Length: 293
Image (cartoon, rainbow, N blue to C red; front, top):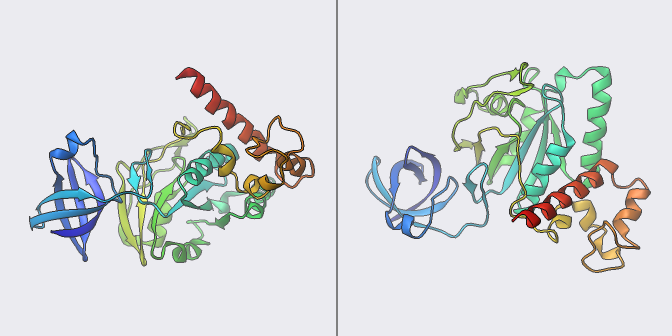
C-alpha cells in the first residue's frame, strides 16, 4: 500500500498525489459506516492497480479541518479581501480571523485591488492595514492589474498547505492566475446588481505553487461560529491574549469584569474600537446560539 495526499474530490472520486503521481481513488465502503468522509488535504493510505483504479484504505488523523470550505490539515489561510469592489469589510475579516484562529491555522491577510483606491478610500483602507499589522498579522497589499505585491506572496507558500479564502469577487482566482498563469482559473468581476462577486470556483482543489500546496475555494460570505464556545472566543483575538494575564480575574471575558486589562487598553486607544465591538457582537451570537440549541 502507498501513502499520499488528497488534492481534489469530485463526483465521488478522490485524486491522491503520491510521489509526484496522481491516482484516481474511491473511498472504502466501510468509511460510510464509520462516518468518515475523506477531505481534500487528508493524508491517506491507498491501494491502486493503475492510475485510474484505486481505493483509499485509511485516513490519517487530522490536525484540523474546515467545514466551509471542506478541507483538512491546513497550515495557513490566505484571507483575500478587496480594498474596494466589494468594499473592505473589517467585520467580515474578523469573522474569518476568529474561525482561522480557533483552528490554530496561521492567517495571512491579503488586501487586493489596491489600484482602485481613490485618495479618500485609500486613507480608510490604509488605516485598517496599519491596525492589523500592529496586532501582529502579516498583511500584503496587492493589485493583479498592476501586478504589484504578488511576488511577496510566493515565499509564504513554501512547505505549507494553504487555503485561499474570502468573499466572492475579491480576486482570489485572479491572484492565483497572477502567481501561476498556466492555471487559467476562471474569474468574474463582481455583480454590480447584487453588490457581491459571482461564484467562479465550484470545488476545492490543491494546486502546487512553489514548494507548497494552495487551495482555491468556492467563495462565500456567511460564517457561523457553531464550533466556538464562549471561553474560546477571547483566545481568537491575539491582542486580548497578549493582555489577559494582566486582568484581575482568570477567565476574564473582557466584557463586564472590573480591572480588565483589555478594556483598559481599549480606553487607551491601544486596541481599535471596532475590533472590540466585533468581539462583543460575536460573543452575543455565540450565547444566542447556545440558547437556541
